[in-house]
Image: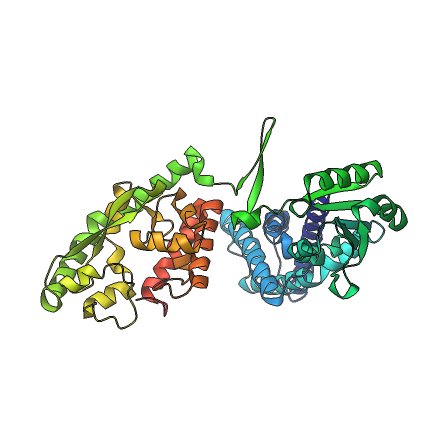
Length: 468
């Protein structure tokens, strides 16, 4: 029910934006018409069709912002508007190139795009709340939560964000008697034994049961009373607190499972696409870039730190299989360094020779790993493989750590492309990296791999401070 309300508001918002953009296009055209510019009439419908198609594409984009759509901050609103405008611009420019319309005025298009940005930004910031008020003003759903006082904290954000969609939280009821008023986050309506009376007196239309905070008997009793009273029943199952990551419900025939989010790379087609991309990127690098770069590295090593050009080290790959990762050696060869292989590199580390520091800062020391990619041990993008000793250490600190081994490790990853590189100094930094690794596994797409590669290429030329 709530999902349908949310989706309806997103669609209404998209329709209003499409209509307003069309009107804006005609207004800007009329203004230019008054100063002597003529847009060819036979092309007018095609340009307007581009706006409509772009607006439909923007509705899909809006769904990625659904959770915070009604209460977006200024930066999030700006970023959403920027993404929307890019789609409109690309479609308009596609029409220009398809028609070979050399008469189109750049000033006209620039004026429309600038005006469209202002319009979209204003609508994204103001319109959602007004649409919710108009749509649900007479469709308010009085809601009662069944659970403990402690369990209400896990629903705090949900309670705050869903009021705009007509969800009115009346109070809560639990297995225990009501605590003092000062300890009640929302009004207490008694215990489950009082549920029938509470529903009738407050005209409750929906009951939300926090499953894990109740005994099985209490959950069944609350559900039975609510259904007999004609209430909608929603069950909040907060198992993700135990999983330490988001979970989804999967229906397989008559069976229902709680599991991690969808893993796109379990689809054989997606794996084939990713492998083809890996080979297409790696083969030319191994054939044409590695040979001259290896000669350059050898020349600097010979002068600054004689020893092997490459450095192979055991790492844990997909399904926790061990493989040897290949890098350009960036540290001096010494018995002490060999004993300290598990020690993370730090800023100004004396073990690193001068040119090795440059290789690490620009990530060029990672280039030989494209050989690992061709061998099928790694991928161009994926969670970065850590030292085996670090795997054991980090898995003790974070129970979901080994989830990152569901896919092949990568030369670069989502976390690294966003600047999380170098020494892992504290548990929060470790958790942030693992969260991004899990996000990558759960939301993989070919476009995501492309974005990671582009961000990584930028980091090579403009290394972040965390680069070692």
